[in-house]
Length: 294
Image 1 (cartoon, rainbow, N blue to C red):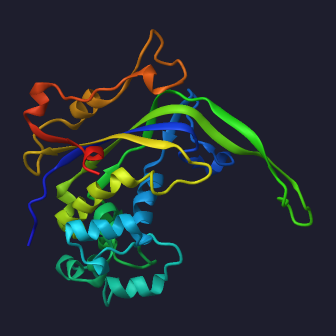
Image 2: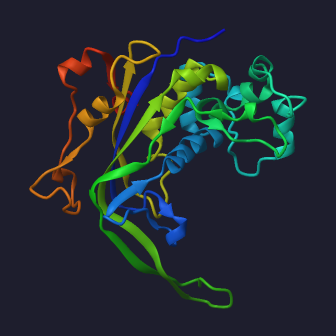
Image 3: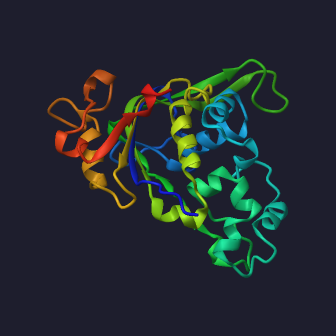
């Protein structure tokens, strides 16, 4: 039975202070940055934090299960570390060379993996039917800073040594952080893919519950101060949508103050940050800040 899932438009407003929100492996883990100086946060990195909150089975996930009445066995992570591909293939069905949608929806694979239902999957062995590949219901977009960001690079010292055979030493330019930045990351809920992947309203409810904790509960030494200032969630009146996504995103995206929008970011006060929608847009959707629900 198909659930009546409504279309939704979301926008994360993220402040970064002396942290590396997303290292670039092609640039020795420098914070991601475009040639024009604008910083980036990949959607993959943000979804990884949501997956970790579920996979770690910690306090955030346990509270979510209680509040949302979730069965833990139905909220496992497909994109998990150390997964055994052969076991997952068996969960997909008896014959991966042939695909039937109704059979797939009843499979252990669909019942078990929250991220597979919500974010989609490309998990397929060579020779498998492409019907098993699913586009995600929830799609996050590349996060981009409103203004250029400045990156600091420092050499770390380590009394215990950073190379074999040395009792002390240095890690040249290992500390790479954004001094300050304000980023915006749109995301979308597309009900058209829900039936194909087996996504339910409870999967989306868990996503909404987890988002406010994505950075606070996954801090690290190189990412100590990343602040999710706003997590706007705008649910449309139906599954088709009652307003253009871009109008909602544009209305809530922060703007750089001053005469030059390309002046590097220095503080939160550098920005005009909308907290309301124009009345003509607000009348077409339901509007909430998930940060106020956490």
